[in-house]
Length: 467
Image (cartoon, rainbow, N blue to C red):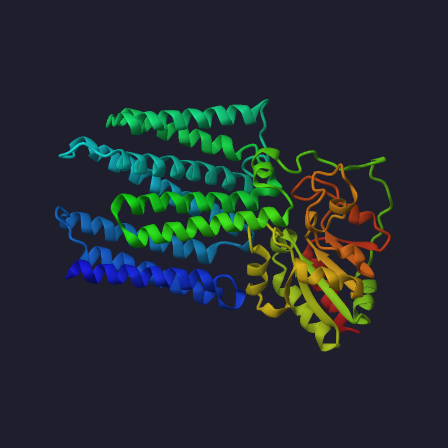
């Protein structure tokens, strides 16, 4: 009877996972979707602890399980509330890495039990354990390197000669060793520890050479790895909800990776092996980029915006760094009170992770209907009086259209160059995260507003209020 009730709970939890994932596809329902999915996970955990048939689970083990859940819940809740928006990608990498580590440790523990099993393990069981171990370990170590890259601890790329060849040979070595363990049926734990170490090293080797501009794609890909590793755990334990959750995370992460690669016009193979944007500067067909840079004062910009009919704001990572999301919402409200139409242009890979700008602007209560995706907003730029680019760089670089020698050539971008006036707010003329100089800065229609985004926008709002 208890088993039937538990299966029903698992089914309901799986349905809640699917509903939650579906709701996450739109900003207006994303928060509720997250709560629905969390409710499903809560049901699955409580149902497992209370109703699962524990033949040898001592009270002390129950206490340890509950204690671990409580400690993890407190750490997760505090971290989620304290984290700054600029650190959100790092937290996602860290949490994702912990999921991979759990999958890897589960495989290690379960393999150690095979020696004590009353009957020899099947090839299927060993394959499931080893697969979860390798994928989870790669996800863990790779996510830790991504975390280090995002917070600046590690330089954006570390490349060695023939690294592609070395990585591929290492991966083939892991596959060959894993195949030996599976087909030989060995239960010698020393072999598994060796595979575990090799997988951890490969995770480091896999992420270290990848360029900084590709980090959103890498985070999404590693997230799918963690989901697949969890799915193997579901196979191992014959646990339907664990299997369903892992499949959903793995498939969603894979689809998101494909979508983001499409948004960058780069095949996944090229993301992994191409180290996008590490050349440092950009050169055109005729040599080094040249042109003049002009700046604009706060008072002149205020006049320009005050007499505009349509303004599009392009947010980027610099907006998050300056924590200027609230003041930019104030600017939006002020302009709309004066009859100016204001929209936000959202590029799929703006920021440091998928949806970074959506989350940032939602924090300041920007209306979701004003967050317009790239495909929808690009046709509107020719009829736009002023485009205000705040902290974005690579996603508005016309080199993607104009310069076949550029590493970002062919990447879909926001066509801000088609607007009547272009204002770019940056702290300096430094290249963006991809390490590529921006052609847009030299456009005759472009004016630079140098300075911290929060300080500059605050002054702009104050100037508009005096008009």
